[in-house]
Length: 98
Length: 537
Image 1: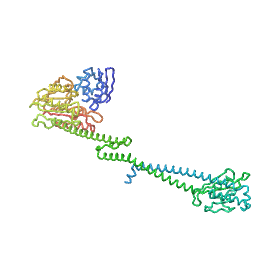
Image 2: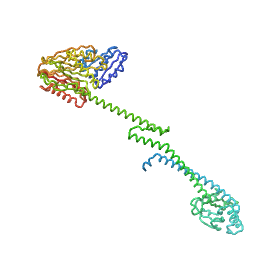
Image 3: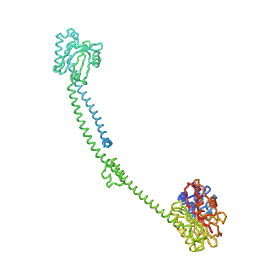
Image 4: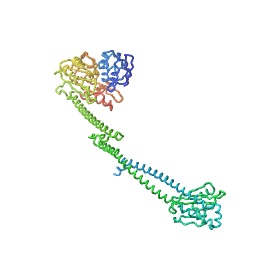
């Protein structure tokens, strides 16, 4: 999985490419832990994300909870396969998906 | 033994020292010998030339032709010879003689005067004695004296004196009034004293050198032995001992080897290396033991987890209304998936399938908690939605690791076939109507348990008829992955489920498992694979 970050003042856009699963989720979690301090708006770009597993959902949930306290988080460009998972797990109800 | 002797550093260094001393002695000996010889020869030659100069005064070179005419019988010749003879004895030279070489090639000489010391064993040459010139060296010197390129010549014969004793011959030209050389006067002087002195000198010099060398070698040897060989041998013995025993020595090397030089540094390094190796071995032993302990504990944990899932089939042998089977294949020693089923009362059976977002120990711990909370809630008479709502609230409390669990929970009323269920972010159940095919039942989804607080889960109801089947599973089934990252998916799962009709619940699960195995082949299993199947008779 590839992680591309671009920061614009307090807005952080994270674009993921590949699979967010048990093997790659810790990578994203470490990345978020290191960079969320100054951020008020977190945007995930899932245009190139092919697959998300429960381990990946857990990282999204952690980020969602962290951002709920100090700003906002949204997920954009979600593919059909990933959207299915969001719907299945009820994440589509709590995440802001555009 | 010989090999060890040859390989000893001490022997090598000593051999080097001896070689250097021998070269040193040879240079000193040779220089001394040469200096000594040169000095004595100079003195000898000086004396011989003084005698020659004196002897030259005893005759008149311009009269030599007359001496030859008289064949050495004239009174003047006799007087000259007599003076020369006296000089020969008084100056302690061996031989004074006057010769005329053959001027064409200087190959022969004719003796005109010849006097000999009375103490020498030699005989005088008679007047006019004619013989071959001794060698080319003499020829060259005669020529030089005759042609006027040199005023004095010296021949040294100190080698090969087996036939003649070692001697020098000083030669001067006898020149007439016309400045032309008429004859050559030679003074021969024995060098036996010089040779004897020189031998003595060499002998003394060698004696001194050998004594010095012996002392130096002994001193150097002793010093080397004390300062290097002994400590090095100690270090070597210690290193060998440590390699065999792997135990630190009771006495450190630096306690006996206290120098600050390379040997001391080496000893210190060995000491520190021993400590570090020892420490490393201890750490490794500790870590290995720890790992074995953890391995053993994981083993026990997986047994406990397996024991927590009902595994006796058929689970309720006296109930004929249904056929039930379930299986879990953990990806690691302990997994995060679980299934559960139990009779709530005589007419209601509860079915649960769940997937925790994490594996190994954290997943297993969360799974155990979730399983117990769920069964407790249902046993307390809560409906599926109520049970999920309560367990979600319980799990959200202090959920620091942000773990969550997806759950499908259903309660079937056996007498009527009414199935009440609720879904917290879990996969869609598959339902097969009597004589039909398995299809996904797109039920209403709530969020996963433990994700957010204050979420309310709603029940839904399905009416099952006799002969209907229910299949629930975790994402380990649909997301089983082959070596090219292709997912098994729900289509392949439904295909496997529908391939055979009229099979038991256990056979259904076996069919899906085989289908997964054929699909993923050698690719490793990343997620737990859990399935539960019920046939409502």
